Length: 209
Image 1 (cartoon, rainbow, N blue to C red):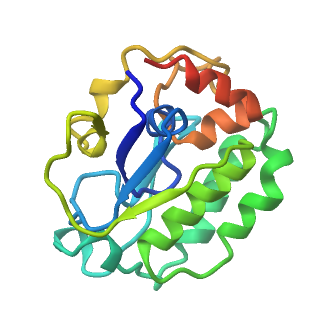
Image 2: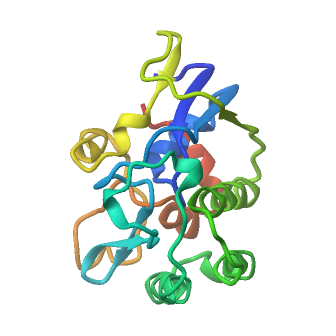
């Protein structure tokens, strides 16, 4: 089901489902006023590894218990999280078909310094848009709304951990780096699909219901 307006959360390197909702939309409304939710994907994303799904988390100040609006959530830069994320991504995808093609642009986002979580998330989204050859304007919602009109597709709740499995069942398969040793892993970060299919990922996203 695709609608002309989509309301979505601002998350880093969003998963495939997020992109399948956003790319067909004429208007993309990003909720930066919602409060941070623990056990959600607001500060993390999943990639493939030789041992299965690997969750990469952006450390945040005050930890998971905070209840700040997303626009105010600060990154805890005391750890070398960006170096760790990049090493994990490179280790997982160095042998994928298109990793080296996209490596220079992607590496830059892991060397720039970020203070706010949404700044890192927004840059990751804009970078993927560029690499996919797509143009979408993200409209920041200035006021939090618990619910939206029926003609606006609100996908914010699909990025809680207890909702994550509900959108995986109908994902078509594509080649994954470790498919020779494990089952297909659906709905990973868009990075997984990008490194496998490059700009052909857009055609794949279009067939997800």
